[in-house]
Length: 155
Image (cartoon, rainbow, N blue to C red):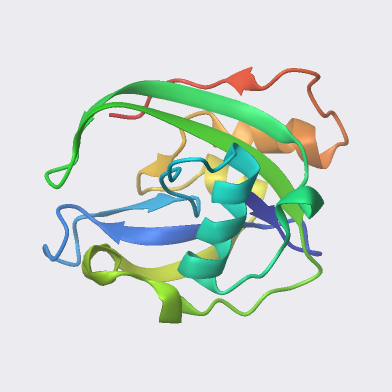
């Protein structure tokens, strides 16, 4: 999920690598997660926003699906081929609430930050998905792709 606030910043969550590992080994990632059986992509995105950051938004009210990436990953707790679909959703503001995180997520997610495009471009820490800064630059300028933009896989 690409969640953008009224100040044109994107929300990224700070993940430890590996889960429960040292604080100096981390990366930044957009909110999101898996799709449950019989769930549409939009329903999954809506549920993940509620669970991960406490944002309640109906699936029908999400913005457009603007990007996709896929590839193989071994996450330790799961491995195989994964696909990430990214919706663009705007909010005036949002206070993040981690109260809905499950056990594995509480071992991985250690914080959050709202980033500007300029900050993304000069980040000294890993930020995923790859290609986020140029994608976000276009989206914030009002360039919404007719088909999701393919992004490089990040593992």
